[in-house]
Length: 563
Image 1 (tube, rainbow, N blue to C red):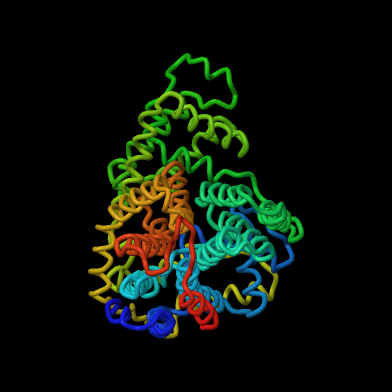
Image 2: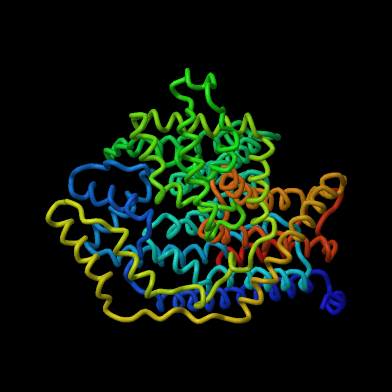
């Protein structure tokens, strides 16, 4: 096509390129709409009744307690998701509204995926027609994996933060890319401050939803701090950081307005001990150790009881193949914590202190073993399973999900109005109106997920090799900002994965499924970036290292914005 365009005068050639790219964008929009319709069909085949699991009560009980006028009481979870649940139930008076809202946000997340990718294109030099078309095809392919995956749809059917997590992540990525555009490409002070504040605010909100976002929040802050570097007005440099800090402080103090009462934290310290039981048992100090003089240090009885529970957990690892033992057995079924608390008479705070002491002692006494555990977990991300990106009906047993949901929801005392709503939900779990039918499995998407799982590692290696090469070249300035944007999106997934690998285990499929949408977006951006490099420079891409978009690209940007 490019050879044919060369026969036309420059202005006519730019006009024809503009028309071609506009048609490509219009076609991509039509495909996105079709994918959205497919996503609606996938979700429509799942039950409207929200499903429960072992963690559901930790989020639901505070919401129902708040609606009953008792305040947020006796919870170890952060306030944001229980507050969302409380607001939905308060407005609708029906638990099925939880599923409706989470599905709607899930579909909105699909649209944000596409909008983020389009914003990313504005950070790049003008693309050749063939490269632009190929990039659109790759993006739509990866978007389909996310939008049509039954496992993503099932997360939206559960009462847990993963039901809204993908939406919050996609909005975060959209704000992040537009912050980079506003700060470094357009140098617009107002939009840079707004998008910067929203970027850090949404990043902190995701941390409230999922603590595994810990390192990702740190990366977000570093990206905003990087915006304070370079030549610009002080307001443009420091305004986004200050705006983000203000948004985060608002979210930090908002639970005080709601009367949020957080219980002493036992979930994290107990989880650290259960996940790292193998390494902690190996660091037992033995009889007569000086640790007995320290009230916050675990004694010999603690290690002996943990060794007993670990021995039984190792007999049947269940889904924890990389970890090598069933950590859920230690935490929920072995009575380990009840036994040591009863024998020593520890309070919750004392037990938490002992657990932290045992965990950090393992890092000090057996650092290689702890690092080996982290490396094994990272292997599940470096070489992912295809089911992390897409799974169809064979993965879902809806009847079983409905049956076991009731067992996770105890009877509790609430206000008469709230109790009536809650009992109606319990009855709907026991007697569903219709038998749910699992979504169909698309074989082409299943094959595509296998290909993505196989190539994801090599795509990342190729990207980092390319960005290092570009940074070392003097004439690679036009591509550096786009590469920085790709890394910023990938860093969110890297931070999430690293937090889970250190604190918990990536053997839990829910963790891998929940970070898959953001990772797929990062892979789409990598493919786009590498295709541009492979296709070479466009006609008016770069002169002396400065980015100079052609007239056609400027017209395209304005039309695409209206589209």
